[in-house]
Length: 432
Image (cartoon, rainbow, N blue to C red; front, side, top):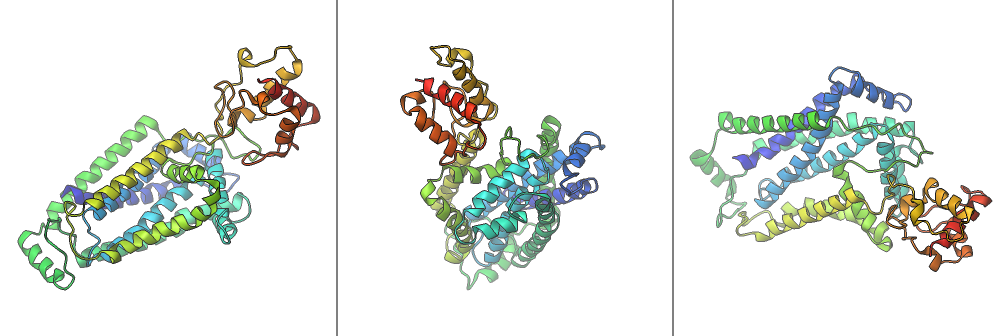
């Protein structure tokens, strides 16, 4: 019985999101001028506002985890086979809508992290051949993130996606009532579409468990555990912190999405550049098509995991893959390391005591170079290690790289004046 509670647990989390979301919308102001301040008011001044935001945040995480576990249980036990093919199809769409719901909610915080994460997502979407530019514009409502983007994401998050989710949840529940809940699989008991419905009626009469009170008790107990865990997380960690209103000129921000989006960001960041655009276009399409095709490729036969070891193996592979991407996403070695400290004088190589080298070392940190480049174990790893860059590049080569940029490095020609460029080149050339 307990393996069947994940679907009802997901529904409970969704209803929790609706209730807390409606409550938050009573005070939230979806405008670029007031959104951040309204969230600050909800978090710090409104009665139980911090608790509401925390429940909404952790409820979203719980919903994504539970919908994933529910689909894995269905896949492992082959509950997608006849006559429940459409149950699986509607579940795939609910999974996609749940992920998109979580993504759109992040921008509504209207802080630097949420805004820049959406910028990164739009840029990745825009790199899809042919249609990327139009899809990015559809996502953010224009060529850049602005007030129109907030309005659009608010519409996605509050109206469009919930309406679609209610529709698919209604369809999903109707199909569950029409086709019944799949029986526990048994080795050697094959699904035959020609005789299954008649066999299922007989099976229900002999071994069926009443929904009330047997199944309801399990669902209520599991939902009680969920809300206790969520409340525990809220009281321990509180609502997600706001890290300042968005500012396009502010470089001290690390655009990390919420944890459930990190595997996607990590996958695109680690992907070889020559296949990035193609993978961004074909990867999601092939994944969705593959999920939708499962019940049609195998809608009869064996359901027992003991006779289908490849199903368990596939789930394990997916879990390891996604968990690995999540861990790498949390470390994010390709992202700027904004919390790095300025280089201490002891590691700066300046044998002649040249003041331009000292000024250049300061510029290396102030202008953000150190966020992406490592030097003497300080700094980020998004760019090449510059500890001994003076051995590899001449002063002229260093100046050209700095002025023109290259790869993922922006051009600093318009950011540095002539004296700053000279000092920065002197500093880098001295590092041998």
